[in-house]
Amino acid sequence: MAISYKKTVRVPMNGLKDESGPPVDLRINDRQNRVDTILIPESALHRRVSALGREIAETFADMEEITMLVVLKGAFVFAADLGRAIYEAGGPAVTYDFIRASTYGGDLKGAGETARKVKISALTADVKDRDILLVDDIIDQGLTLYHLRRQLIHKLGARSVSICTLLDKLLDDPPTEVTELRSRFNVDFTGFEVPDVWVAGYGVDAGEDFRFLPCIISVDEDFYRWRT
Ligand code: IMP
Ligand code: MG
Image 1 (cartoon, rainbow, N blue to C red):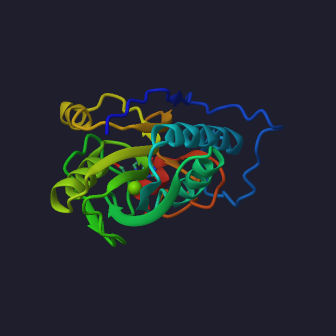
Image 2: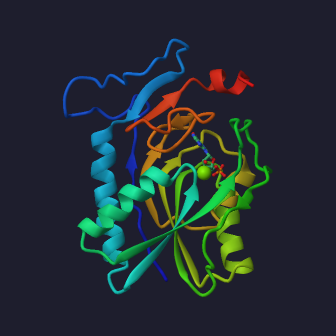
C-alpha cells in the first residue's frame, strides 16, 4: 500500500497561539514548576486531528474497514479522537486493537541513546494477513515504531503496516545511527512536528503525569530526569 503524505504542521518553540481566547490556564497544581509551556493548545489539536481524519478517510476510501493498532499507553486519547474524525469525514469503519510498547519506562531518554530495548506486550489481536494502521503518540528516535513495524510484519505476519503519529520530534543534532534508523521506515501520517523537548498531555506522559490534559505541553526535563 503506497501512501505518501508530507503536510506536517511545525510547532514553534514557544507554542501555537490559541485563537479561542485568553492564554490557557491549565488549572493544575504546579508548585514544583513541572510545566514549561503550552506547545499545542486544545483547539489546534482538534483542528489537526480532524484534518488527519479526512486524509486517512481519503487514503483508505476503497477499504471497508481500517484496523487501528493503538500503541499504549500514549496514543489512547489521540486514537479515540482520530477514529471519530475518520467517521466524521465519511471514511471506512474503524476497528480498534491495542499493543503495549515500553521504550523508556518511567524515565526520559539519555542524550544520543539508540540502543534501548523495546518491550512489546499485550497485543489484543491476531494481525496475520491484515492491513494495519499503527497509531502512536510520538516518534522520537524511531526505535519504537521501527521495531514494532518489523515485528508486526516479519514475526506476526501482518500484510501491511502504515504508520500514523500525532507528534514527530525534530531532534537537535541526532547521531548518525538515529538518522539512519529513522530513514529505514516511512511515517505515513503525522500531526505536528515538535521541537526536541520532553512533551506531555493529550494521552502523552512525563513520568505518568499529565496524560489527562487536553493540550500538549513541554515539561521541565530536569525535574523528571532526577526524580526517582
Ligand atoms: P522512540 O522509540 O525514541 O521513537 O520513542 C518513542 C516513544 O517514547 C513514544 O512512543 C513515547 O511513548 C516515548 N516518548 C518519546 N518522546 C517523548 C516525549 O517527549 N514525551 C513523552 N513520551 C515520549
Ligand atoms: Mg509510546
